[in-house]
Image (cartoon, rainbow, N blue to C red; front, side, top):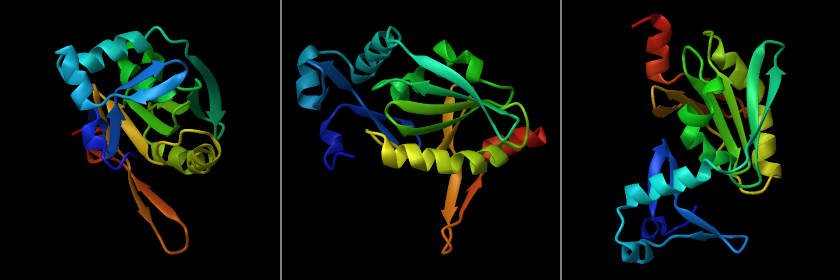
Length: 184
């Protein structure tokens, strides 16, 4: 991440993950500095909404896969736009929203994993997907995150991860998803 990220137009859409406003111009990405954006005399939130409207016109390929012989996972493939496209999940990716929301992983800018959560065994899927997420994160360009996220009712939350000395990782449900499972 940029060390001086606060100088650029940004916001937090996901826990622990900064979203930047970027121009795709002359086949290059350009981060928008706050001082330059102020010249447009448009509120930063409005700029993000305009960007998301434009993003909706981008081609997005979603392929369906089965993991662990029972978990449906959609993988978005786009050279540059899969990660920001997740911000439009309830508009263009409704098929990935289950009864209990969506499990997301965003290892790179061009690859996103989405699982519609219909059962209470989603942690089994995180265990299966974790090595895949690490592989994409380390091998594909534009790495973003090794975390798993949960989308529910317009909000993103994070699955907590705890690393152990023996290289094991423990992933736990977001508290609100755990409460939802219990019917609270």
